Image (tube, rainbow, N blue to C red; front, side):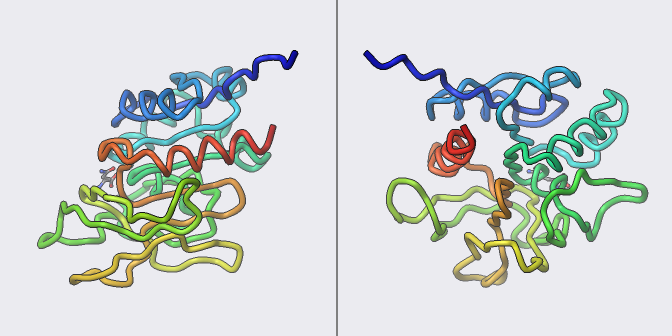
Length: 207
Ligand SMILES: NC(=O)CC[C@H](N)C(=O)O
């Protein structure tokens, strides 16, 4: 008889943003989504999601909750992390367009431009080809809300998706470096959960 496998515990940084949507998406994808607000909760999870929201607010709260150093250390030690939108901003090693004093956690060797799409396409939806999805290569329906894009990637970073057409055609909107994944868009609110499945698989593969 094979022992039942325990679903991986994946934390969602629960300081601000669309936390509940990520927890629900992770639960649907066979993981156990848990809220993370304390250092000991960072230490207890197998992976971590940094949600969409407002990166400047999340950054301030990371300081107040004394989570910045523990999360940085966990990422450096190899904790798989997925950031969507504001989460992508927080994972960038280099940030353009941040407010004065805004810090990031880092972990991804990229330069990210905050609020990059500008006023005309402030918020929009489009279909994207995303590389490396677990179940099929049908385009992903992507929702962008005052989203960042990736200006520049380091040598170890894989570009998973770029915008296909329109004024932002060619802009990088999904990347992966080792077990750190980031998207400019919000799969947690579009109902297409293949990126969450990809992340759950990344976490599961680390055993
Ligand atoms: N939907 C989002 O997460 C928007 C990100 C937001 N513009 C920021 O700078 O944090």
